[in-house]
Image (cartoon, rainbow, N blue to C red):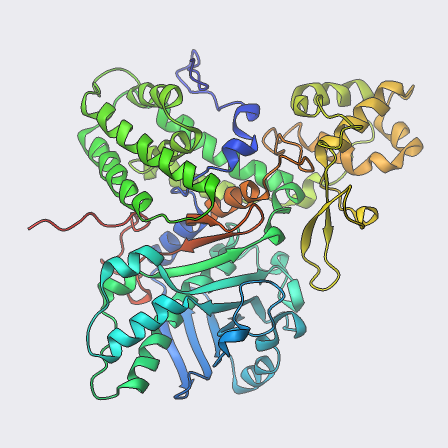
Length: 568
């Protein structure tokens, strides 16, 4: 099998072809990397020496009240406002239809005054039923991971630390069920803050919120332990705090994002593929770089051993990944690192011997020794989508057809008469305005379908263009304006070759969790645990520095990988 990356005459490695990278069976097994937005955020916070302070803690013996955490950077401050709740266990649910949670949060732009807290107390706990303002950057909520939360609470109340292996298996005390931003429910629209350096990369406001929610999750368990046994309770030690991240339950609401933001998706994938090409082009490798890669491989194997799931498909993938990492370790023990282009040799071997899950894990691992090659690419992962929205009416129909032939070969097999190819439709639920997936031939509602069926729409456009006598795009769209949306996508692909998921997203065989996995890997999530083909649980910030370590010598950018066992 030939490697999908090739060396040019100039000594540069070409990016992998979009048709190789953009299929769901590969996007659905992506892993976190140095380019993931959580790691980008923490590097910035550390580099700029941000300070974090819990400025208010008014929580009673029942765990009800308000807390405020303020992050202060070179130019601005942001405050997480947390409303703690004594939730009836019967009301605890990860589903979007829930109406109460163990805690609700908002990220405030600045430092709130009492009037802000009073206003938000009447809205944030209601979540979708309430409204926030342009002074708030995110809206979120979380529930306890009850078994682990109660275990840690009992341990601390008894004056002892919990066992680390118990923390590692779950990885978090609380699990968010939504983190809304970008104008939703009245929050500040991203365009008003996109020019701020700390929010230049995608999803930085949401991930800053989650980082501070993590601190609340350990504070609230310590508080309740002290309530249970004020004479004997102890705080959680800092080494164990690092072992706890934040969980998240994510469903279909996230799935359409990659389709609705094609040029942004292109930026993410191009950055990742460029990083890979840069590493593969290294003609020689140092012992320090080899040691770094080997260390991360060993620690990745530990992470995989802690990765639990009851989903049959993901269980099979984890088993294959574990085998892949073991196989890779044996290969490395006899690999000749002194040869020309050693990373290309390793990558070619991985393509020939490992599963897709293993191959993409190796890609992420290869980034680790090269911050000088990789990290700067995070600055390219945002874009102004409005710059690419206008349709070029002057484009000749022949050029439009060339783009279809070049970038949309995956749509040529679409059969408009096939029930399998047309099995589903995307729509928004009336109650929560959240994306949902309907069964076209079993359920009503297809008349409310959202334009996410790229394969079907492009196939229809191809047929319409072939039958048209028009010579320019504007002329064609005047006659058939129903194709405007699809023509725009096709034209965007001219400069954005990685903008399309190359699968039929309404096929009966499509797995929405693959879309979720792709996006969440760019966030920096680990331990993907699908609960069905339509929603997944993940872990974020496990092993990350705690807030008081950011900006100090205690910060390490390899935090995403679990520590190796201590040897004595």
